[in-house]
Length: 196
Image 1 (spheres, rainbow, N blue to C red):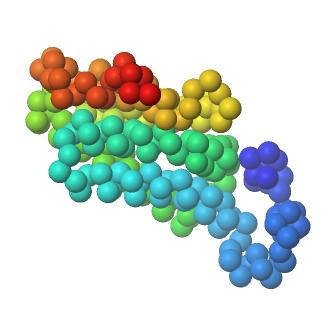
Image 2: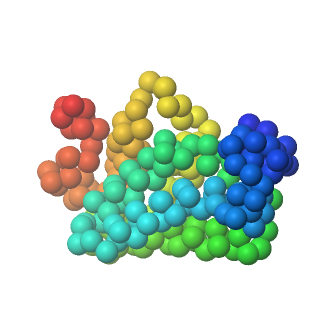
């Protein structure tokens, strides 16, 4: 409803009516309509953050870590598309303390990506001439824009889109040595396509 009519275009009465509950039921779960908006935002941010936190605790290579992070990041646009649309359209209405909680999670997620890029540079998998922060923000910007154009019934599945993003990003990050390493062939689209 927020996605279709905007945050201010939907009343608690309409939410209650649409969900088949009562105002008492609504206020049992949420202190306010703003808290509901926060929960909508928190769903998908918590999903990608949890997935990224799980990845960085593994002994995978930076390439494997970044691939896993990108795949879960792209997948969120399929799992939580209405949530993300509401986030971009209506987040200006979030106030303290909710906006602070969301910002902290977004900052943590961004810093995990920075850390993986830095780790890849230190291990010689990723090009050292690429600034970590700009590289990380480019990945975030590139994938974030998916919410604008992704369609569930589109030509490519969300898994195929994740493969394309992974290929584009890793090909631009790898050192010549890493690119020649046959162990990394499985991350490229041509091989993913052959496996299907």
